[in-house]
Image 1 (cartoon, rainbow, N blue to C red):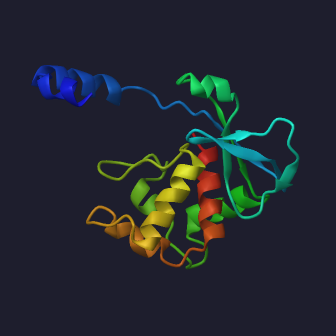
Image 2 (image 1 turned 90 degrees about the vertical axis):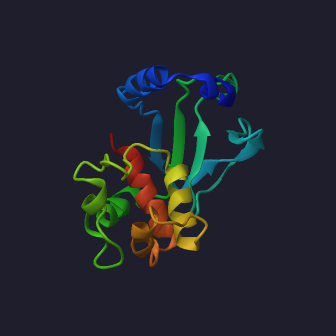
Length: 176
């Protein structure tokens, strides 16, 4: 990819940017609130469901797996995912996203726009993988992500608990 980019003309780069910027997002994650999740194992770079395995408590985590591991292994861009989250996470996340949770944080629509689809340099946060959103929130809070573009997020996440970040991530993944 780097070699291709190195020889691309300005016209080709503009055409590619124009094409990709017009693609509509594909929402391929189904969020399920549950007290128990299928047992999983690491398969390459993903979690895969142990088909014959027992279920285990969800706890305070997000368990995100492809609906069809073989489809994912074949790098099918239409692979759908299931994100198992704690019961009540979506409703609690909606409250945190819309109001900041009574001073715990800041409502997301102040920066990410009313539809939470972002504007300019501020990214859209709807319909993304809850594992991805969780990682971003955690990394910002812990200081692993830093810099001038991240600075506005630091006060937003500084007082959030892991459970609250899971709730926010779970809710955002349900939106389109």
